Image 1 (cartoon, rainbow, N blue to C red):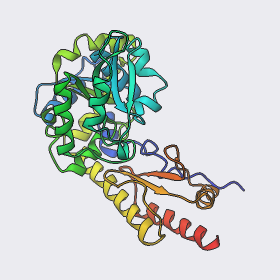
Image 2: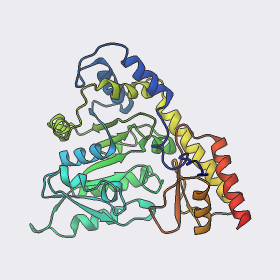
Image 3: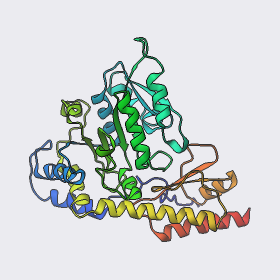
Length: 348
């Protein structure tokens, strides 16, 4: 008999819709409303985001992170420009060339960096590498917050990067698929983590936070948003029933559920990491600063866990397994994972 698959820690995408977003969508579904975002729910969601960030920013809603990042970067770039990012950034490794496609050829330049963070020195090196007309002109620095390896840029790191981007006159884009987890980790206001730290455009992830399929593209530098609504339409990202996407933001924002769920996911990740180390003697591959746990796994342990139905990713780094916690992760699920791992170790 096949062992049932367990998706508990495979990704924070595998969790369903959180109750607050589900309830708001049900309320938005109760009556007729104007189409294409001309409805009260979408207006309310955009205004709540402006209140959250305490600034008059431009706000747009799209279906997923690929479109959010790709369209945002395209809005900041011409085809002859380049985007500096970490060599293992999501836009570099996991977007199937979408940023290049939607920007008509903007080149991505990968910089190395410990724990998936790019450094001011790495940015400066690529920004000044060549200045001749035969090389794509650096235009944007893209940061992932929290990073692909579950780490978080601290405020002093953001300030140092800001000094570098200002020196080279670069726009700063933030891939915030897990931005809420980063804010919860930093313990600061959303404005302090973004526009006050030099971020010009943020792609704020709603899907991994507990919504069905909606990301917010937020332009703090409003001039960068020129004609962005046309980009959304052309790319097939203008929802006719927009209220059923944007309402989830209302549910998450109006009573602070976005931050509550982020804190919960981060707390579960710390608990899981602690038990992996203290009870099983496993070594963490990267600091646990948000809702991801990367652990060094011997091949027999990984194989045994998969044979018991657990699904997890090991796509970054040889011998490293990733476990993601979400808004619905429970201590019981963590205990079940630890129990199976202990049994596999004992039988080895």
